[in-house]
Length: 137
Image (tube, rainbow, N blue to C red; front, side, top):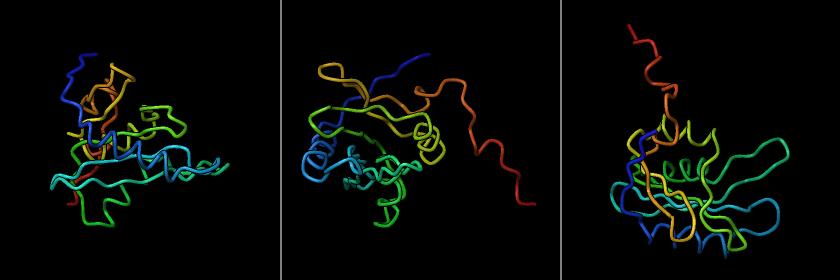
């Protein structure tokens, strides 16, 4: 796998950390995500844990962004509550992020090793949903 690091959007990391510290309470909300829209706005959200498998914070932020009219996201980060720091996206989130935003940068790593990588780097040799859709003929 070839990794292409990009500058880390520290304001985005800080926004997610702030939401994790102030809005994540109890077992239902333990991770916050922040995404930067193409127009510069930062959209935040928290996960919605449920024993049946609620959505991760990254997926909730996609919906929150759409509700605010932000359909193009440039970068995203998830941060755990209780000062756990940056949390990498799970496999499902990686696939959804790639399908929705193939040029998205994802902040991963921890401490001084935090870096921003293109979402395709998180899923080498992946299935790309858009590549397998039938043309509407």
